[in-house]
Image (cartoon, rainbow, N blue to C red; front, side, top):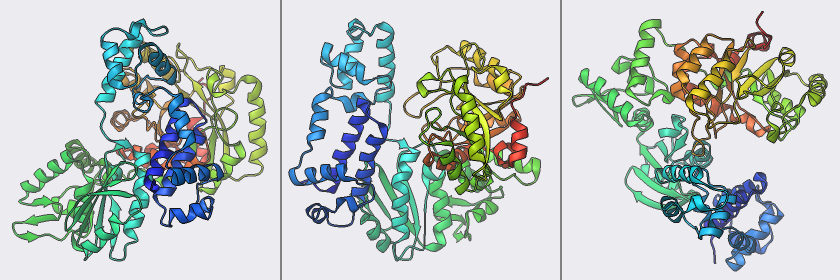
Length: 578
């Protein structure tokens, strides 16, 4: 008989296979939701199955309940077995190779019997793949590159996925009777794009009691190591989690130590030693005397440097930058915060590839306390995303006007306009001038070489219309590398033109990267922090955009959508310069 974790794994495999097959992604996502619900279930699964009460669990509908019951009662799933039989062997592994589609998997399986990454690699190296109809030497070389990236991968997962596991785990630890304080640390607290493990720090006088509570979390599948103050576990989704529990007096120092990246902590430790101090996870000491560190700010004050936010604790350069800012300004400006953002920028509706109507998006933004919302559906060149042609643009504008009468949030007419191969935008100037905001993005011909792509982007940025450079380098984290271009040259063009740069909050993009945000800031470039929302739920991706912006050192005054509606509209008005 399968237990709840076995059934959760089967549901996840079903969802993944449906996604690979090309089924509706929302249907595939339902299986992930069901798996998560089972992992967190505290009631007796058998009793729920026998009583036909599975649909009482949030996230589990009748169809999913039937499959869970089948798995529980028989140890098998007819649907999962059908999917396994229908799809080529090794599909779950092969799907992780960049550039490998289901169509390619089927063709290679039929022609060469390929059912694993190792078999694919051998076939490519032997020159057999290029001989398969529809492939060729170029595709074979591309697949070899994809295999190399697959082999170089680690066990890191996307930040958004790590948070889905980490936040309920943190809530569980905070709910323990002995816990006085608890927080996430490590790469999650630094808002890195990917996460290798969930780090938690807790404060309690009785560490053993907190650890006992931690290992009883329904998410914990296996306890790998347990000590007096530490515990490392493997979660049901495969991610590792580690808890450090310290006395309350050591909490701030421990949280700081478990947050910073190794290079950063090493550099900060060197600074402390110059002052005759020793820095470790218990805090600071001078000889045998332990200094008082009640807050993280106390620690920096003892070392004599300005407080450095968690998102900037990556390297020695972050420490140098903080000291330089303090020397120039006396006090470093505050990093942008989620509460600073007054308007949602870069939002899609059912007019292109969005899930919700204009009114639904407006009402959600309003409920979130936003003062304005840009309706920036795709332009005609994005035919695959139902781009809005001139024939439907007037219809969209009329609907925006009707919805505006029913909502208080200010609605701004805009577009996400494709940057064409020539560097032009794919609406005529007469249309662009009638919009409130233009996001200019690349969605096609991403394999141009660096010279071609740089010329394309520089041409676009120099257009007299004001535009916001959307998801700058087109990356999809762990799936698609940024396209080739000379970024510094493009940023120079942005700085000299009527343009700004987007920090994209889509957790699968988080583009542009913090290193390029820092380069843009040197040039005085302005930014927007966006959600790239295709649904009302995705509006809440704002926190990912803000986290990425903070990693780049972005200040409130550098963010255009931290302005009020009138000031923002004036700042981004696309009207051509005369």
